[in-house]
Image 1 (tube, rainbow, N blue to C red):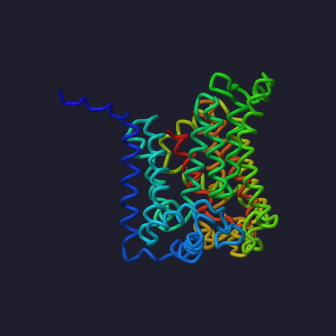
Image 2 (cartoon, rainbow, N blue to C red; image 1 turned 135 degrees about the vertical axis):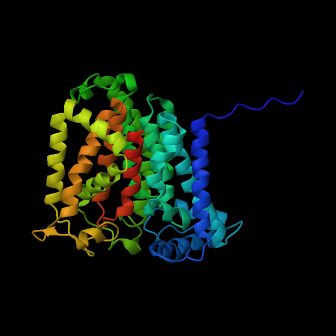
Length: 404
């Protein structure tokens, strides 16, 4: 008798894998075109990240992590240095680097398709697939999407309806790999802590006051989460010690230090722009928020206005406000020489969209999505460089998953 065919994977898994492979093929096609070495991202890859990979490859498996040519932690470069032991051609390294994006897109598309079906799940992916700050990172030798893959895994683990030992183990392991790839994403450990405090879906409170009930169980779970993130925290501190107390390698410590108080308003502005592409999902949730959470919605809008008005939001290269939509800020009116009309106009829309999404989904999911936004903004405020590429992928993940 002929062998029976194996079980067919669910459609949402096939949709995710199919979308990831399609995107990967498109990125590799562009990567092999004559324009592959043009643009800012090719410049960064050729002058910073590829030299780091080559330097690690020369001594691999040993490597000097004290002062290389990337401001990120070195795992991405170290992995590709290992690939270079087999084939060190730039074409091969770019193809392998693109696998991080393939995995990210397959996982995200599958997560959306599981909730809303294959066709709509893939439709939700299109804004991210066409984002300059995602597509370009999938072509050249850049660590960004490897980091975003880790952020996505942490977010999906935290969003699971059930909090259990698997959440802690998988989250703790993912966090170690993530902080070894991009140290700025250490904030995702907070998602694991938030998930522990909330507990499983049935343990998630309906109100803010409910967060402080059943404290013994919540504290016990949270202590477990803190133990799970402790190894990643230790790794991060070890790199800081290796770099002489800095958050980046010594060669970039003069550049990457200081705060940028315009970060919250800028994040909300980008969220408002992203929300436009998901109006069909957000508008009903916004109506629901107006009816059931009106005070919260009004407070969020007023807070967004304050965050847009208080810090300076003009184009300023030296203050890290450059590239991306800062170029639009540069040509549009500035109020009082201080406040961009773009930031002031879009930040309240972004705040309203976040309230709509976080109150329109399951309670536990709403808390986690809110924690992701707050955690990322807090971490990025500690960086002086306020660039769109550091925010847009996560914003799209939050809006996309909330919409799904």
